[in-house]
Length: 251
Image (cartoon, one colour):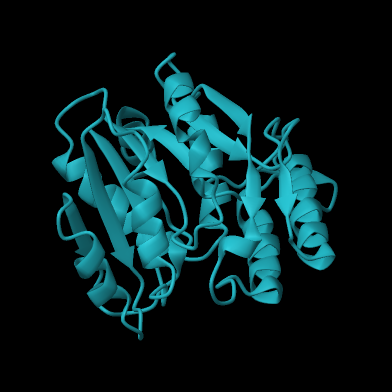
């Protein structure tokens, strides 16, 4: 089974295209759509029910807005409780249609070669941004460079939600850390990546282009708030030097 785990928050205008796009990919596989709603105030839930009515799907959420990390965690937990095959995969992506789903077939084939986690990377050779403002590209680039430096990561893209996980890999993360994702915000993408690295998951990146122009409405990410959360995350989870002594802080 291929589980699509997609957090939603006020995505009413993006749902139709999301459905039409996803319905055309991976048609040879059984698919289940897990849409984890993060307290949408528009007609997102009604629109999901309208377009996904002929698919296997579920809408999760209690109406409260906690952030994409919390929405992902709820979705991961639901999938772990319902997956019955060690070969099941989880595809995570945002609902705003910025992810290039034409790459999904290649990403899945790479996953089936034995990789625990396949990352879609705008920074891998051949990847990039389409019609994204210089400021957002600058912030994204700097954030990824800093995270790679502070956590000694060999991964080029640390912040993308567009990934394919083995269900068994997520189970191992839960077993090791009890909670799959703790961080409620966008920093959750880095959190679960670091956890996957620490359990020695095999990880590979593939190049993709981020199509910002496909999004209807504004991005839900608040740059200043997210940047502050990155620095807080570094302080909580990184080896730091205090009065000449090295102190290690782990999850």
